[in-house]
Length: 444
Image (cartoon, rainbow, N blue to C red; front, top):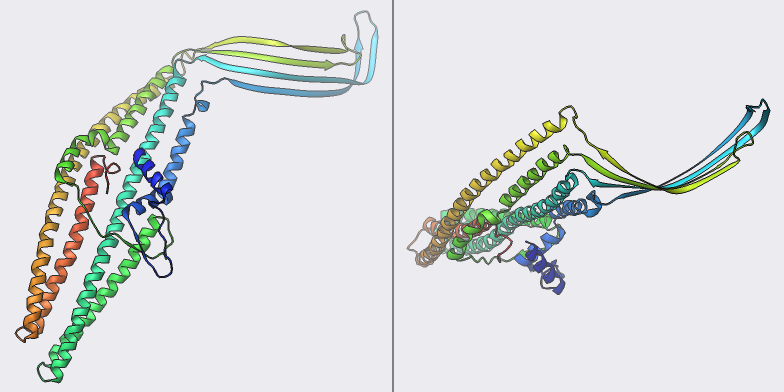
């Protein structure tokens, strides 16, 4: 996944892919590579999950590990103004009105944990594992967004091809209406033929208008995924290529080691392992080192034995603490951590089973839909020949208006069904690649 990101970043830098633009009335073609690069750099969902990844990286820093000492500076000052009366042991009396006492202090305090039962070690390991988990979550988001992107992209491509087909159908119907009017004028057709052609023209116009509206809506859906201008005009690449079956078959072996759901489950399991070890560490004693450098100054009134005192110096010490019994809270937390580990192990096995099923199902769906697409492609040729023959017979008066219309509808359905089957087959291939963990590693 990281390699793919670097490739896209390099392509952006070279200007080979990037945001698309419209100059005047020119409509540019948004290629698949351009769409992926735009998605990676601008999609809101991907940007948000990448921010979460940055937070995980910050948390896994040594600055948040607990391995570094803490160093604090403290200082203070106080001032007292009092009327004092002091009687000494010899019976003498000393009275001072407005006696002033001033105290100043400053200290530099150092605290460092020498041993905490390996608690901070396992906590640091958890933070590092959470960072790896965030990488996988970014990848999972990119994969799901990529499938969403191509679902919309291929829908836009399908509607684009349907637009061409529907325009051809509309033009053919217009020609038929013209012929029907000429035929009616010369007494070769009935008014019913003209009316049928007019009805078909209305239906074909409505179908084209509906497709045009869907095309505009889908273009805006794609613009949202790409975080682009909703009014941007662009077309998409309608060419589709499939990976060969042997390559796809070989990818099955990588599913359990590369599938992002499996990797996330394994990461969650490892987090639970560190959680158990961290709870055990809390049952061990802790040893800490303290050190300080302090400075103190005091200025006292005449009623005291000293009028001024200044002291400074270093101090150090060791602190040992052992929470022998905390009422059972830590023991309960340890038991729960072990149960959570067992749950994560079960979840991992369940996901592996699901991935095996997904790989088998998506590969079967791909082969079935690809085969359907190939059959429908051949059906187009048959429907085209049938329509052309029917049109020739219609011109010679050997075929009725309704029979020609049926041949036209058969050709329309064949083309539109083939368009749908082509993109459904490609989406099935992409879903299979995701199940195998290879969606970001192969050209799409």
